[in-house]
Picture 1 (cartoon, helix red, strand yellow):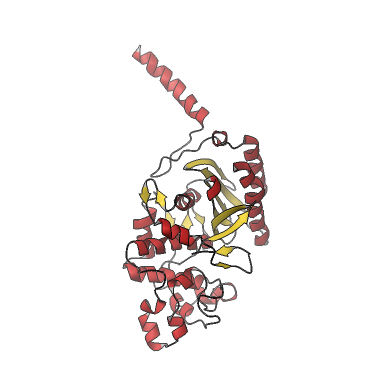
Picture 2 (tube, helix red, strand yellow; picture 1 turned 90 degrees about the vertical axis):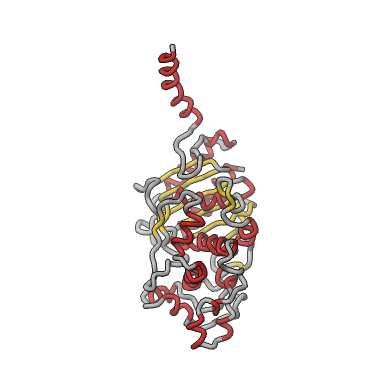
Length: 352
């Protein structure tokens, strides 16, 4: 009798699991992939989303959608799979922002009004530029430091230099700190150097202890500069499913799996709109972008080539896109526009 019951259970249980749509469990949390229909999302809408995603792949390589703490879509294209790392490009800046918040919460930093001369005393002992010395952490993480950019036309020279932090600091002041938005990855690299100096550990080790391990993120690739400081705000390699966890963290106000990883106040401050980019039209927070799509406020991490982590608070939804940097056509703006169009015309209508 017991053997018969056991046999029936072995046959029926997988069918029940399949019917409910359970697929797998993520590291460190009981997320499950479930059927979208269980979350009031029409299967036909999801089919339209999948179809549109396949049409922009390549360069699109992944599309993941979650509602609440549950994954309802996990699609890969072009040979990418769940265990592959994707280059987050400048979406890494949003992760750097979280680390700044944690460092403040943990007492390693006193706050965003700390000036950079505290962390580069040797440089400022020989360079008495008071405007530079008065640049604050807030100025850096809102892209309003006033320093000439190290990105775009200066990027090659900057990353070819023997000292990235020094090269960034030596750029001329072209605006008053706290005023004009000047996109510069050199400034976010200064933030990584500041974190390492303030915490006494590498930025990666700090991230592992206070962010990645609590989120169950096991695999990260993060290159360093010639001095061994991790590349602040660029080129972090991470699985798309782990970038989804970063979005979930912010959707839940800095809490993950019942633990407060970064303060709720920091999350709120991070996604405020401090200044609008004249180029993209997006608003900048603390290395998080935001805008309105289909009449709904959305904030997001954004990296070159089509790397995104969108958080749509009104619908309790996180959406991750990653894209190939090698197979991408020459019209990056078009690919970004197609992703934003998917958010506005396909995904928000499906989840609302």
